Structure formats: structure tokens, C-alpha cells
Image 1 (cartoon, helix red, strand yellow):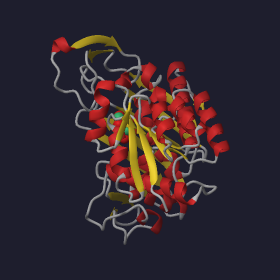
Image 2 (cartoon, helix red, strand yellow):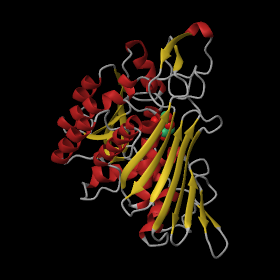
Image 3 (cartoon, helix red, strand yellow):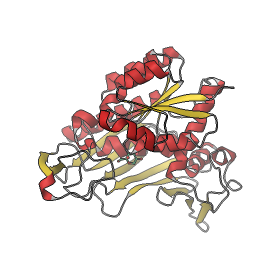
Image 4 (cartoon, helix red, strand yellow):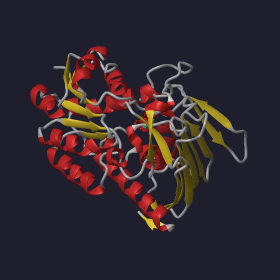
Length: 381
Ligand code: SOE
């Protein structure tokens, strides 16, 4: 069987992470990247060890005719790039959010369904083995009825008013920031693990830094701590640094989530506590190899990420024995293993990986959340 030829659009924080994960799958060749700056593209391709760099994404997909493309660009390009690839018969793995408007996501879902091509959204945080373990425990009845869900996703890379990135600009990123960027992962994980649907939301946002200092030269996500005062311009900010969201679920029970990109010391921390009628499950992405299991009538437990201890469904996402810790980069590898199995062996009616429909769902949740904040009222999803 021939190797699968993959092209990557975007070389910021996440594009190289996709490339690294893809290189850990033996039958994949990353054949090209696109990067929009002519003076940098060759160097980018060289430094990533990719044979060819293109300034123009559309030229890349036309000339290279890859089997699949990964869209890792700023958000506003996801829709048009995904659409062009599907229309050219190319499988698509898109970063979240799938688009910046619901109608764009609707269109992409329709095109993808008609095309019969693989369409995946990089909700990689589902691929921590202990997240799959929580989902499997719930499916097997070990959690019982879900009583409540509490979650947070906290970061500090936008903590200072001098922290700046394209994600702060709605025309590149969309109308929501913290909720779309990290709340989307959190709400996706909550629905994925519990099997419940969020039916209504009540949101309250805060923009801590109403004016930020934009560096006069471009910098990448999680970078840019080294600039001087004369390197900045003042920019008004109208997307949220912080949000509280109350949630109602379709089993009649409730939960809440908090997201923040201005919590000093919380680098990239998704934390979840799901209480059920059998026990409570607690998990945090900064200690991803441990699952806390809370009991009313017995000792609490900590389950380790060890293929011999977890359910087989979770063991299938583990490549190393217990104690040989796996983390963020492994989540993408595990997701791509499932996605590329579908590309190699053909689509199954129920994709095990997150699809464009899941991307569409997150856009709907996000838009209802913004609406709720603006109205100061509960909004149905
Ligand atoms: C930036 O906030 C970001 O890179 C997100 O976009 C990712 O999805 C998350 O994994 C880490 O943080």
C-alpha cells in the first residue's frame, strides 16, 4: 500500500505540532506546507524538514494533489480552505473552530457528507487516554446517572496587556476568544465523556484588558515575552479574557464551566469533575496520567494511565507502559491514528474521531454563549 501524502496549511504554534504527530505514524509523508510570507516560506519548510513550501495554499493543493490536508491557519481561513480541499476530493483535518460563522459550518458539514471524504476537527483533548477511560466508564454504568459537571480551562499566555496574538482580533479569530479557543475543548470533552447534550447556557464574560499593546511585528501563539515599550501600539479589545457559563443538560441536571486566559501560573489547564450516582471522576490535563475516583462509602482512588489497568477502549490510545508518561503531543498522534485508519481503510458510518458535525456543534454552543452574555439571560442551544 502506498504512503499517504499530506499537506499542512499554517506553520504557527499548532501546524508544527500536527507535523510532529504525523511523523509518528509510519505510513504518512508530509509533502508540503503553506506559509503566507514569501521571504520566510523556504526557511519554514526547511526547518520543518518538509520538501516543499508554498505561499499560496490553493496552489499547494492543486500542484501537490495531497491525499489529505491539515488546516492549521488563523480561524477565519478554516472555512474557505476546508471547502476548497473537499471540493478537490481531498480529505480534511481542520483545527478548531471549524469556521467563524454557523452558516459556514453548516455548509462544510453538507459538503463533507456528500463527498464521502474524511472530515475531522482537531478536538485532540478527547485523546488523552484517561478522557477515553472516563467516557468508557460512563458507558459501562460505572459513573451512574450524571448529577453535576464542573469544569475549567485556564491559561496565562494572555495574562499581561502586552501579550498579543492574532487570536485577539475578531476578524481573524471570530467574535469569541476564550470561549471559542479553549471553552470549545472543554464543552466538547464534557459532551463526549458524559454523552449528555447541553440544552441551555447562561454566560457572563469579562474582558480584563480592555486595551492591549500590539507588537508592531508579528509573533506566534505562546511567544512574545521579549519586546520593549516602543515596539507596541494600543489596541482596544472586544473579546473575552474570562467567562463563567452555567449549563443545563438534557438529563435535567446542571453544571458550570469557567474559562480564562489571564490566570497566572495556569499554563494550559483543563480540569473536570463529573459527579455521578455511583462515584465522582476528577481529571486535569496538567496531570493527565492520573484519574481521581471519589467514593462516598470507601476510600478514594487514583487510577494511573497504564494499559493493563484501564478499559481496552482507553488502552487503544496508549503507546507506552504505565509510568512512561504521555501528554499533549500524544493526543494528536492518537487522534491521527484513528483518522488515518479511516483514510486507509474507508469510512465507517460512525467515525470514532471528532468530525465536522462536532465542529458545527461547538460553533452553535459558542454562539449561544455569546448571545447569553449579551442578553444577560439563559439561551437555549
Ligand atoms: C491557544 O489558546 C491554544 O493553542 C488553543 O488554541 C489550543 O486548542 C489548546 O490546545 C492550547 O491553547
